[in-house]
Image (tube, rainbow, N blue to C red; front, side):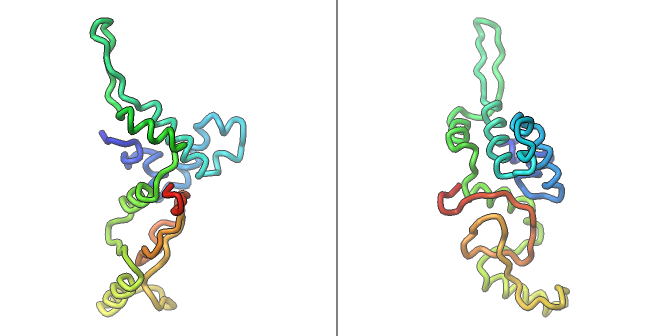
Length: 171
């Protein structure tokens, strides 16, 4: 159905990675599903640890398997060996670009994403058209949470519960 597990929006993993409305519940559920939660009760509440462990589990288990016609063993569609190895070798960490792509996918409807000047300009234009924002609000551009997104801003705080990634290393 999708090339990567996190691209399937209607799964708990897709919801957790994308930061949708039920992301907190999805993240805790994924944390409980892993063996690590049996050894460490705090694991299920630690999304940064859950993300990398669950991602490695999905990718490693989702490898394509070649069939063996001689033995009559069927193959299985899945992810390419190189792609799986890249995720496993990274320890399951997502690059900043991957993290942003998954987050953007969940809030792109009506979103404004760009530099602060752009966000503030759209804010002023929307106010002039009569769109209502909080009465105390003076500017449009908002920093996004969860990572160092550089100069990238959003018009509103689109998702509050985000996953961790490190811009310095790109993971």
